[in-house]
Length: 342
Ligand SMILES: [Zn+2]
Image (cartoon, rainbow, N blue to C red; front, top):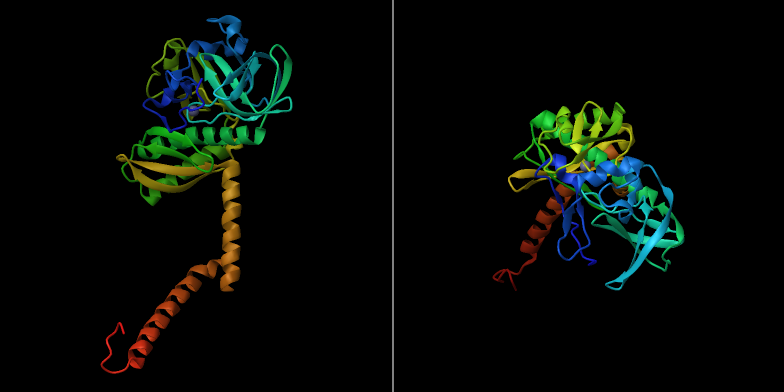
């Protein structure tokens, strides 16, 4: 297992399939398609294809699980880092654009989680013994943030389809910002406003977010735009009556938990448009930061926040006037016949 792995944007050649692709800690390949048979087996807690050799994925049984009990199966020292495998875990290993969880196993910090052919490995900063029971606790603030952003992304991607027939090609959930690449050459401010408005309508309607695990044959009953290119069972995430996406990520249980979706900026990207946005807690923190900046600027200019543009314009005008005055003074103070550079 190599510590390096793909943390790049998650491509969405088929949006339905995007989150079934998960990173893998293998030098042979950076990514592996998690078989949908494993995903579909989750509700029973058993994996029919490999039995107990695979980690039981508690985050698929209940994505709101913050703590759990498990047993350390194996401890491995790889590339100078200690990794432990558990028989069951609520730690999401990352995939489909969503980063891995962090947290603790007992008192030991978990700094990374990776999947390797159905076995989940937790990178720890400390020591644990094999065949010992352990209590796991997620960094819930981080996980809930990821769920807010990820469900928000599903909603925003569908909103872009509704208002502009623009498919999402890729999704990236960064530390600060989230972005999607939409197949639209240049959405104008009005179109962006409509997409943002529609997405937030869906958030505020507080629609249930449901997980369906269905066979490949049954998936046709959902209005997926493209059939996922996998065999076996498919995990479909539905924002009730609005969006259906095949996805292996973790999600909030109601759209209202996304809180708010705020667009930040757009830029042209590979014939389409990259749209940066934030949801929920991130939107609140950004708003707080912007409010602080505005307050500081208002104090600096001794002006009300609404008067700041005028105050800045006045300052620019004053600066230009001073500049012109300075040049005039320099010209008039220069001795006759002297060159400008002397
Ligand atoms: Zn997803």
